[in-house]
Figure 1 (spheres, rainbow, N blue to C red):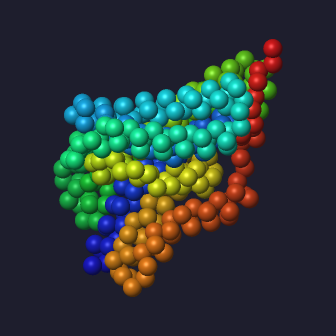
Figure 2: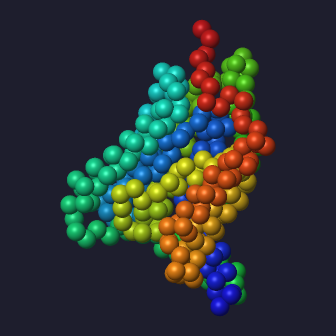
Figure 3: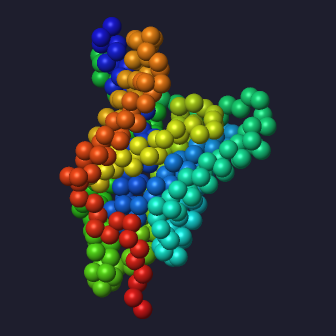
Amino acid sequence: MDQIFWIGLVASAFRLGTPILLAALGEAVSQRAGVLNVGIEGMMLLGAFAGVLGGVLTGSPWLGLLVAMAAGTMMAAIHALLCLRFLLDQIVVGIAMTVLGLGLSGFGNRITLGAEKTVAAPSFARVDFGPLADIPFLGPALFQHTALVYIALALAVALWFFVARTGWGIAIRAVGENPAAAHAAGIDVTRTRTACVLFGGALAGAGGAYLSIAQIGNFVDDMVAGRGFIAIACVVYGRWNPIGVLLATLFFGAADAAQIRLQALYPGIAYQFFVMLPYVLAIGALVFFSKSSRLPAALAQPFAAPR
């Protein structure tokens, strides 16, 4: 029974951590470039709805994923326009994006999917690893997931290499640390930041689509349930390093999986106590690690190229 518990916990940590990981990786790149996007929650919500709608209309979960990423990119474009072109406050715009995503997803659901009583979106199948899936403990824990789980893991490694080892990654870090010096060196600060924000929006949409297509197979109002804000906490917890972000999201995925199992083990305790545990951990991580973490110097500071 102990082995079954730990196998289920590890497997669930990957499944439950993947949507947070996708959103957090995009947010890490955006913050590296000096743009804080607290509207991830709304982008994930719209992505979750768009993923189901796209999947139902096309019959393909992959096309549904692309529609979700397009929806997240669209909202990120609005965020970039308001913050980088009109130089509005990034926190205020991010809150507006959260509210907008909540409203658009709920309204869109009611006039499209909500009109049908039985809507089942096409879902992602598990990747067949053959004999690897039969390895004791490791097989069911690591080799019985959908393709999106492995794509997210590979993306974390690829982004670490991209940001740390490539010229484009150096440009992203430059505009996040000292945009004036980056501009003087010939880097288009606004264009670089816009690209990073759009990338973050696309991954936020993908994270929302994972929740609706890969986990549930349908859309439910407010189904993201604060995971966008946990993604922001994971960026701080992982210190803006994609590998650190990966470890942080797996930690919170394990915490979410543990609270589900604790509800069954201790039915006498109010389930709301267990549900709030991942969010308490997120707040605690922000308080503990924010003092020792070094934020990008230009984070949340507007920049207008001198004429």
